[in-house]
Image (cartoon, rainbow, N blue to C red; front, side, top):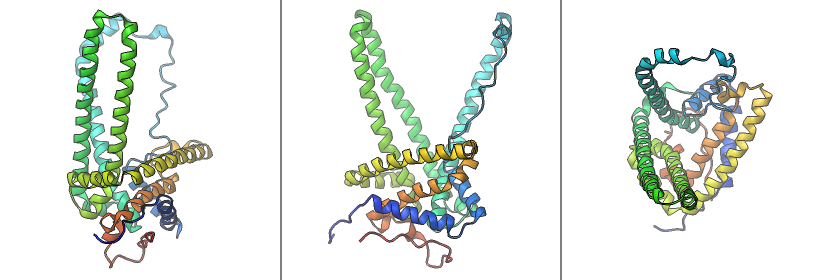
Length: 313
């Protein structure tokens, strides 16, 4: 391959993302468009300023003497065998449902930014296979993560507990702390790496219309081959998340906590979410046309579609 490798920048893609956000949301301003793109962002996992918040603090203000006594508990005890499995099943169903919606919503939100259009149904149908493949991949990784975490806990803590029978607790405390620190660092690095790869899997699948495993291998090789730029991306992204948290707090106070409501907060903070997602798209397109989401837009697209930001020379 002739020529020098492309220069990967951090600040320039953010400037491009900010200009693209202004063009999508403010040039011209269309409140209906805000609502639709906000719903796409909501489906992709952006729930507003503080996520789901339920005011449970006012519950259970009765005197302690009104608590269930022993006979009442014995009456409910046979039903616990039925209630607990049903509650666990419902929680698992909700987790699977929200994960599936988030996987499909990521492609819808990416499409809204790439094509500068407020559409839900069309990208929902067009990227059905990619969204389902991405969901199955996330579900399989989450299941494998839980199994691996459980095996790690058994390997570390069970022998430690057996070995502790012949020693005092004071002698085992330093070993226990060291093991916890090592385990925490390992899982933190794994979570950051997987989060980074899964974040960029969506634009790769959007461009190439490939399966999740193919996109995972592609992004993994890209990250391994360009460790430095992706480390800078993570560090700068962390700073952006801190800034977004500050903006979210200000918006929550300015709107009397309306920004905490699901979807309502997403619409209020939509410029932040659009800018962050556009930043990732503008960053990865620096690695070549194969990573440019705007290269998939046909030439016959209406003039409302945004012109892709110019790559740095």
